[in-house]
Image 1 (cartoon, rainbow, N blue to C red):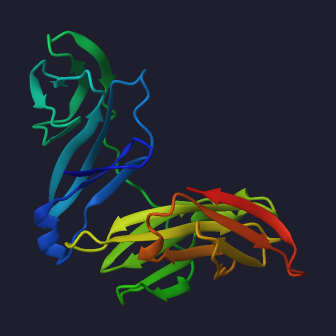
Image 2 (cartoon, one colour; image 1 turned 90 degrees about the vertical axis):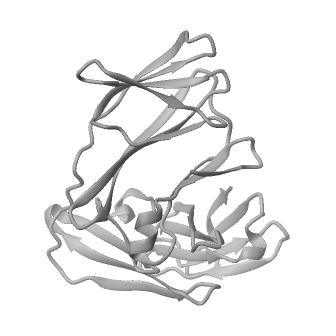
Length: 267
């Protein structure tokens, strides 16, 4: 588990499974970011996930972070057995022997601070794709690697979205996000992933714009402005490395007449 502090006092972290990297031939860690410090009323946050590490083999991992006053985390199982997890600089990472039922955060004296129930792992079920997949956005990253975004209709009027990069596919299916934004709204957010073992980051802007937005512009902290392509209201745009340290970006949407109809600050 790799971690790095943010400017706002929070932290970003990545869980790297070396065996998966070997199978894929590149870094494939799952990253998370909390730009602000943990809220005082929360003592423990966790994530329980399952990863394919070979032919019909899975690795279950539970990972998370804790408040400064938490010295250890107790993992409880349905049979009454427990395990004590080591906390390192506010983080823990463990392979449970079975499905855990609860996490208990304890202070240095062993006193219970907070208890969290562990949600059961549920299989991800995607709706059936019922139409052809279409590539809407195709670009080449600064590193020279292709990045594509495509969509396909699915059953029950759902829409599946696919992002492909370095041999991996990110897939989401559900209500068409374009139906959830007003004509003059911008629903565009930053995205982040480690590109390869050298830890160089790929930072993107992803999302959708309202039907009234014909053109999109991005203003960097230094005042420079660049166009952001929009395809059928979808956006996928790479932020170049020289602007990775910008504290915020400003998105401006214009209509066919060039008038400003939407504005959004992204940080």
